[in-house]
Image 1 (cartoon, helix red, strand yellow):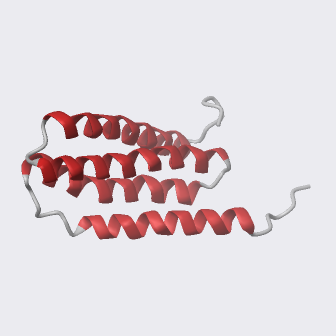
Image 2 (cartoon, rainbow, N blue to C red):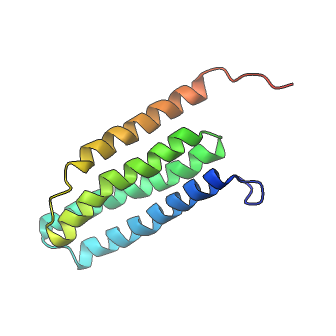
Amino acid sequence: MNKLSASAFDRLTGAAGALHGLLAVMALAASSHVAASAGGSELLQRGGQIELFHALAVFAALCVGARLPALLFAVGATLFALPLYLHGMADITTLSFLAPMGGLTLLAGWGVLLFTLLLPQPRTA
């Protein structure tokens, strides 16, 4: 993706991927220093790993022109990691219902990416 030719959607989705990478590294570092408990450390690590993997997936999807999967990865990573971070750092569990929705959104992103890459593409003249 060339920055000069990237659409606003691609730039915003890419920025979301970069933000996920930044937050993931922060969460992984926090798991050793500011977790609310030993269990909180594990939650921060799990959230950081999922978020970091999907930050990379956002960029991979954008590189092959799969915009919907990139968006699903960005949204799903947020929905999945945010409740884990809140629970791990401050023992806040009110948003825990978002994690399964995030997981389903991430699965949808991988499924859409799979079909996007396997289905025949229309030929251009």
